[in-house]
Amino acid sequence: MKRKHLLVAVISAALAMALAACSGESLPSTDEPVVVTAVDYGFEGLPERVKVGTTLALENESMVELHELVAIRLPDDEDRSIDDLVQLPPDEFAAFFPGLATVVIAPPGAEGFVVEGTGTLSEPGRYAVICAIPTGANPDEYLAAAAESDGEPPQVAGGPPHLAMGMYGEITVVE
Ligand SMILES: [Cu+2]
Image 1 (cartoon, rainbow, N blue to C red):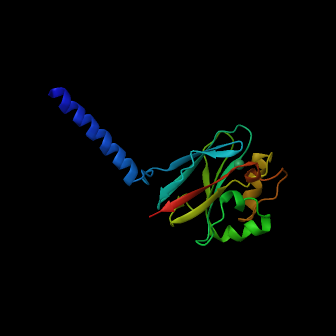
Image 2: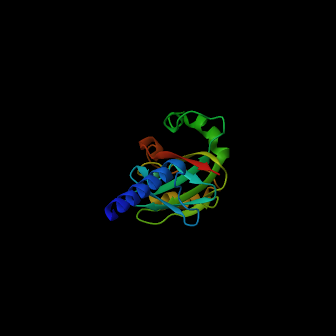
Image 3: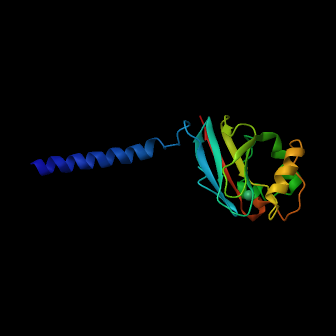
């Protein structure tokens, strides 16, 4: 009899957990920043969905490359995939720049610091997340140029932007 009770309890608990998993997705808390890790060349730990008010932090695990996390809110009627969007010619992709929400930049092996916005995604919607640092750019040179460029993308020597190497993703921000 006791065994049976235990079994019922275990099954009920399992069922409750399964139901919880189905009904409410568990989104990260907005109390703490969600830490995204930059590697050569990609974002790790980028959540698919977050709540409004979530702050993104960036940690750069590369020992070579400077990385950034640029979050751009896409227009509501934009339904192309992020894979399609990053293939667009640069001048067409630039049409999304007015939706720029935040930029966090992180030197090699270091934590990031915010250079645009606050790191917080405060409007619901779909966001493209990209890194546009030129491949192989000298981190110090880039940071110095960025400090003087007044918000424009700094012009420094380097190869294609990291997003062309696959360093991009997307986040959906929900109420
Ligand atoms: Cu990068």
